[in-house]
Image (cartoon, rainbow, N blue to C red; front, side, top):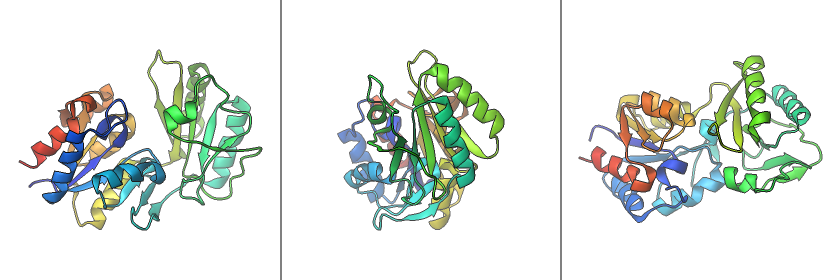
Length: 273
């Protein structure tokens, strides 16, 4: 077996468009582990939202969460690698977001990103954006105080607010934070993920591979969105889902069937040949 480790994104890749783990995909992941292929979940989710998926599959390897900012042990529930945005820079960003009056949350550093804070008076939209887009229920606070390097800051609001904010962040904070823009052109809502500079799923998966004594050439990685780009470029075999972003598919070495056609199961069968 050429590849010893498969890194799998969760939403839009491992799970179908209804956020469900299908029996065929679950069976394929279990079969892969039985055959000795190590499975690493690499996701934008926090640890608490990823553990149910890992436990359903019996995955016990280190988990790459928060888009690679944190690598956590699913047994001890402790981070083995954690980065964060410089506190003074994060405080400056929070002030800017408050002045723009956008919906945002902060994943706190002292909790390894498990505690999610939002400013009072925000997120009062017709849709439950926190639950729908982030899968979170935040704690609301009068003032967001930065006491340690935040793992990440997530923003979701109307494109008329988000697009110029994204352009300003890219211009004024280049090299200080990594800014990922999510959302299609005609959608009602747009999101930005602010991460520590130089942290991504690629660095997270590389850390896990090194711990296991594996080189990039022995790793395959599959994802669907722009936050998977560094991961699939680093891996010996980078795979994009058919339902993935055009950029990711352009850069991938292989295109898998969509997440609604058990694309991950297809990939696993190919790797086990």
